[in-house]
Image (cartoon, rainbow, N blue to C red; front, side):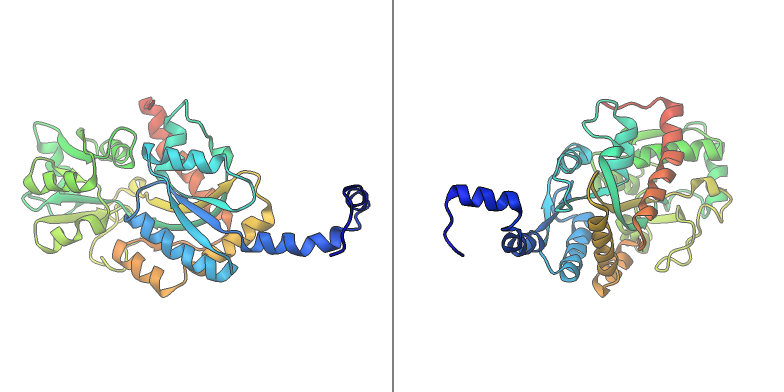
Length: 326
């Protein structure tokens, strides 16, 4: 490149004469810049494994690095806040879900971010809740469970992951739908709640199938129903709540990709297409089977629809019960 004085460079830039020289290097820099997917949880969990597999597939499709950045804390708030304030260029995404996005936004009045701070990229997968009880409970189906609960002189105890969690809210919806009283018991994590279910200290749990399936196979726990709209392939003998007479208990938890609001539409389209390609790999299929989850491919509007469903289901309970978290 010829040597120019500072004054000549300024003049040439003003006239646009150097633009053809500069443009190729800018395009190359943008195309090779890594994309970071922020997982708002510690590494090693189900969501972390899913996102790392999706990131690998997206990287191959986009022909640029797609990396995972774990930012745990505050029930997903730390990671979500980081992405809400990130550059609006598609280089930082959030692995969002029911808790970090929908529930936090509806439950926390002083939250540092709002739903409008994000734009939908892709809904990745959805999964069922279960109605799981100890085999010592003298019931074999939802009808028997309801009769048993109503016959008791004291409420059933159900496990939650704390106030405002999916399990807490779902228990409220269940008790209202089935017409009996339950008492929520908060646990630090799923394993500790399942241990109390096994010992009989707790009466029921809404854990995911993968969290309880080994205990079910061992004959210590039984799943009475699933919250999915249809039965799932790896648990074909377990009915849905809808089949059992309670369609209002159809619900799911989900995982998705979000970008900061204001990210260019053409970049959202590219990211969505890459995510959909990544979801069709054999690795994802195996992971979804293990976790009893359903892959969800489609446009960003599919995630928008899921967010609307969350407002209708969880938002109604939160408002009616006046549940507010600090």
